[in-house]
Amino acid sequence: MSRDLQRIKQALESARKAVSVFTPGRIDSEKKHGGDPVTEADLLLDKVLKEALLEPGEGWLSEETADDLSRLDKERVWIVDPIDGTREFIEGIAEWCISVALVINGSPVCGGICNPAADQLFLGSVGEGVTLNGRPVRTSDKADLEGAKILASRSEIRRGQWVRFEQAPFEIIPMGSVAYKLACVSAGLADGTFTLVPKNEWDIAAGAALVLAAGGRIKNSNGPLLSLNRCETILDYLIASGDALFDQLVNYI
Image (cartoon, rainbow, N blue to C red; front, side, top):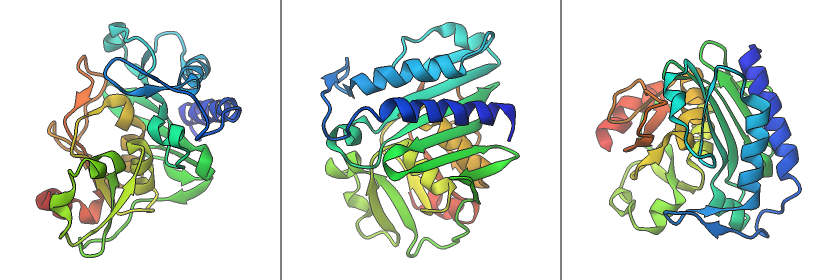
C-alpha cells in the first residue's frame, strides 16, 4: 500500500473510532446556511481528519471547514466530507460514510470511504486498484442496462425526480450518501449511479477516485476526466459505472 493510501486508512480508522461515541438515529442536529443539517459528529470528524492527514505544503477542502483558496496553488489537496449522508446518520439509516480523497494536480488519485454502520472500508488508488475490507474488488462487468442495478439518491426519489425513469430497463435502488453509492459501484456491489442535481467536490472526490481505480468510468459536463480543486466546487451532475455499461448509461440518461 502506498504511503498516501496508508495515511487515508489510518485517518479513517481514527475517524471511525471518534464517531463511535455517537449513536446514529439519536443525535441532535442544526441547520447550516442553505438548510443542510450538521451535527456535533460532523465537526469532530472534520477536526480528526485534518489532524491526521494535512501536512505542510498540502491543501484542504472540506464541507465543514471554511474554504481557504490558497488550496488552488497546491499540487496535493485533500478533499474531505467528514460525514456524507448526514440526513441518514441523523435518521439512523446505515447509508452514511466518512469520505477522504487525495487530489493531485486536479485529478482524484486516492480515495477512502468508511461506512461504520455497515462495517465497510473501501480503499483505492489509481494504479493500485481497490479493496473492500482488505479484499480486492472492481467495478461490475455488466454490459446491458436490462436488469442493471442503478443506485439513486433517496432524496431525489422523494422529490419525484426519478419518476421519468420508472419504465427504465434497469432496477432503481434508493440510497443515501452519494459517496457511499460511488464506493458501492467501485466494488461491483451495484452496476452504476447518477445524480440529477448538482453535487460538491467533497461529495464525490473519494468515490470518483475509487471508481477510476477499480476500472470504471465517470463523467460530468466537464468531460470523462474530472477536474477537481477548482474555485467553484459545485459539479452539475455525475454519472459513474463499470466500463462495459458506461456508454449505454450515458446515452440513456
